[in-house]
Amino acid sequence: MRMVPPVPFETGSQAEKRIFDRLRIALDDTVTAYHSLRPTRHPGKRFPEIDFVICSTDGIFVLEVKGGRVSCEGGIWRYRDRTGRVAESNEGPFRQAETALHGLAATIRTGLPPDICESFTMGYGVVFPDCEWRGRGVEWDEPMVADVRRSRDMGTWLRGLFAYWQGRDATTRRPERDSLRRLQNVLRPEATAHRPALIRQVEDTQQRIERLTEDQMRMADVADANPRALCYGGAGTGKTFLAEHLARRWAHSGMQVALVCRSPWLRHHLSSRLIVPGVTVSLADGVRLDCRRAGLAGFDALIVDEGQDLLDPVSIDVIDSVLDGGLGGGRWSWFQDVNQSFFPAGDPQAEQRLLDSKPVRMPLRTNCRNTHNILDCVQDLLGADLGVKGAGAGPEIRMHNVASASESAGTIASEIAELVDHGGLAPGSVTVLSPFDFDESSVSAVGSESPHEIRRLDEFSMRAVPRDTVGFARIDEFKGLENDAVIVADLPDPRHSRRDPVSHYVAMSRPRSVLSLVCLGAVAGGCEIVRDQAD
Image (cartoon, rainbow, N blue to C red; front, side):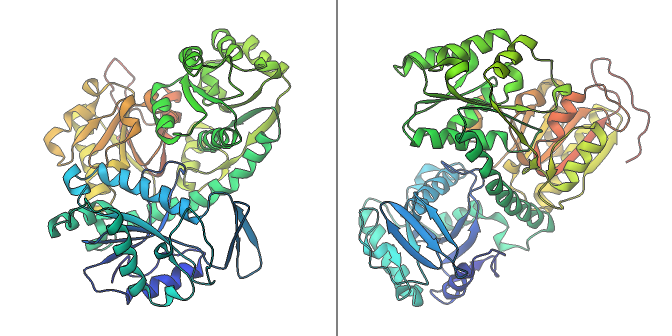
């Protein structure tokens, strides 16, 4: 079997490494196994990771590997590793593999025509390489499980898995070879070439971010243990992720939960990730209507994201009116940015109403979005508090000074080529941000200078951001969102000008791995001129 990458990614799972070696000799090279694939869509995880994806003309199959001793009692799954530590989960590996498959299928559908997608059988299986599995349950059939005995001959088990899912999907036709090639190009385009250093750095950053995000989960336990919580931290400290996780947790416990924000872009992004019964994602000015549509007198619990945008009397009154028990007696968690100097001051009376409810205060200090390079750059140049720790070393900050909009356009085109063509990033992993609308921005002049299309994003595209085109957005629209790489255009050099600190702060804190600044000395609209043209 063809393995991509040819050696396993560094993980803490010895079981995955053993299965990697067994897959290598399981089937011929017409079948490809992708290790540690990270689709951009997942119904429940910010940074999903699939242990293995098997891809051939037989179909697309997700494999979840669980090493150590595995048991399930009373709906609770327990995993005991070689050191004796026990982890518990109520999701289970079969449900985990199924939701991963749904996320993978959604990612594939953004890159391939429907007729090609429908030609592939899709399925999943679970591998328990360290234990014998005799359990019975409604979540799995015997062909879906490879325990310590079956996993010794992965080829035989995989052929049975393929046949099982093909039998359940009789309407699917066998895909053409060209369809398989196009599918492989969507799954991991750099698979047939050398892996550029930049994509390796980005993937390493993603793994470190995932570990940091898991560490941050303990803060959700604190918020859950208190009826009211005021959570504050800088950009990248996991506020939105914790808000999502808390909404799922409360909904799964039977509550009707509202997650409220100001930005339509953020609302659509959250709605695409929180397709959970019992969760309503609303804008502040529409939450009353959403409450009535849900047939509720009030929500059992309420979560606010980007709360610094809602510290005004009208918003506070609305939120108070839709929460069972109100702000003073209801259950709520409020997430806001600690860097208040970068945002319009909140109304003192609105802030006091929150404090009068005696919420527990939760400072979020661990940055789980940005690399050290980005963290240090934003803190040094802007004096902003983005927390500590960060996602380790990453690519160097890319900074260019240009004198005109046409020079800016050429530099942006060169940056896109460097990131996508030479660095190996998918075009959709790159977002260009400007303080201006597209037609007023220097980005509009890129045109034929770049072979890659730059698509103007809107609030609706936040539900399924295209992977095959570079995205463009105004900086204020992209607040609360993020991407692997961000090119900031049409702002002055932050080393020499603090004309627009809010835009600098928001834009420079959006990338997870790669920050590129194309600083324009003379910006349209009569902005100041930066004389220093040195890179």
